[in-house]
Length: 635
Ligand code: WTA
Image 1 (cartoon, protein in one colour):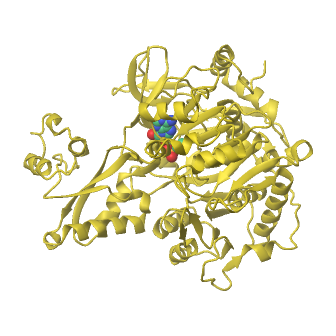
Image 2: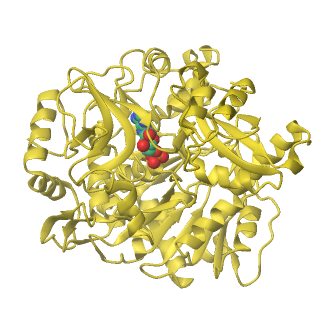
Image 3: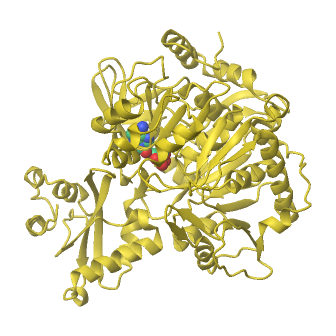
């Protein structure tokens, strides 16, 4: 039996049981079966969740790009590694073979070196979905630099915060990006961000050809620098626990958390889960529609697929351009076999005429996937019936930026699926549901806070520059457990269903948004005294943001529609358009506890139109405010 590829349910159980009873032995076998190591590990695992420290495959030496590229050159050199589908359907798709990708990564790596980038340096990547994005990431990994990608929809302020937090030496960006019919001017966002950062060198990819300012001495076009540069670049030999990348995610407090991922464990886990969750076979065409700027794209467009020698599609555009059939057009055109997307996209497409789907031949599809938020039953059925024609199993995959790779998911064609259930933990994943007294809840048909009891190879090792916050956020809520921040239930047969966040993070259209940074942005407005954000159910976005805003005396007479616009503009400039509020209600005050804490629970009920279920509010500091908030509700 091969551990590396699970093919039926009994095998899943066998592998799972082994992975739990002898985790170190199990991961050692997986690591031996598939990868290229420059030196073997001395010790599989060292861990302590109190400190917390987690180290996998200590003593091993490797370079992840050798596993993603060099290893395939003899057997798959002419196979397409990246299949780039441009925004404009009239622009030709690019089939970038393993040979070509290897060469372009080496050239880019040599360019980074010539610009003074060395092992351990942080490099910020702020690029749209164009081939230079994965090339830049892999080039960093090849020379041991740590990439920190910032999704190219974040604002200048958000970008500057992330560049400064991990002290990046360089920024890689493009002149602009295409999003459907729109062109965005990315370089000017970078210019604005860099007014607050000390960056010696900015490398710019030309994509849209819009006018940009190039600061002499600092900014360089990439194409001329790549001419005559060698296509060979020896790898930097990395230790197993050397950092691979930093990726920011929102937290309950204002500052984003730079999750730090390391090399060997991340590689082993993402490669292993890619193979099994998507049941990838040698000549399949695999497509994940996420942006590479999120963890899903890091792990399941770039590293996981390339470590398996797969063909990974990357799409520059949006599902609605030039019409709502674009995704299905791409599936048909490239005969995609595995298709992985987000529930919010499914809901948006399900609203359109179904002929957008039925007019395309989707018979190549074998496996469907979703990720990022709970999928509602209606969307699940629409996806299953119209896209999968009830023949392609849906892998509802649960994971987090922090977990690096998929943790809970059916194994397609093995695990029977049920709508809205992510089903069973993958091998090596030991889940626990906890009650409010900090005890693990045993048995089935129970609900609690979702925790993980034992380390897995791709878990983030720390928050960059703030190990204390890492411990506090993830390891202090429960003894000896990693706390996910999600709630979950376990049904009668032991399947898991994620019920949503139990902290101050709200998932809007699959994007994690912390309430604190949005409130901070709103409170910057001179007319605002204070504010509180809650999520409420939304047809397409899953959740949308409802803001309660109390104005200062000076703002009380102002035109409320203008104020709403100004507040949303402020949020767009501080964070990005993804964090805009759907509803803004101006309030006389916010309900507070006697210690002065805003009672979001009450505000949430009001936004959910459940103001008849507030319970006892008499212990509040200002119970009279609640009545006026209910009266003014826009829910
Ligand atoms: C949520 C995205 C339900 C969850 C990969 C998690 C999900 C957060 C699912 C992490 C799913 C992700 N079902 N909820 N299949 N997948 N989530 O860091 O709340 O952007 O904690 O990683 O998304 O979001 P992140």
